[in-house]
Length: 108
View 1: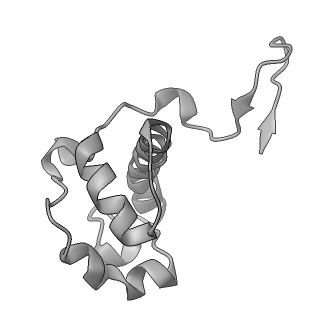
View 2 (view 1 turned 120 degrees about the horizontal axis):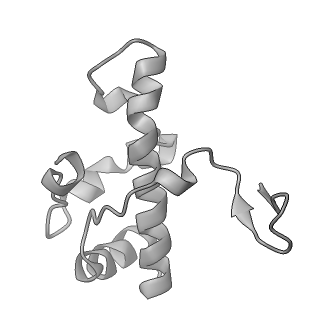
């Protein structure tokens, strides 16, 4: 949901509570994204898509520790990830893709 906050006429802000604190985390390079996304989604991608993808991933990564702490869980398991049923069903396709996504920059 989008709204214009008080004192900021015309300014559009996202309702996400942690938006200002979302760090810039590069999960994949643009080349990796450009190569793998069309294989998975059967469509072309551009730099704007890559930027938005990065924002969504960074936001969700930042939400995981809060979700885990809310249920007093300090280890995030694969089953805790917010994956759709369709994504879970086609996860085998992702393992067949070329370059692997590096998790060290995310976790570091």
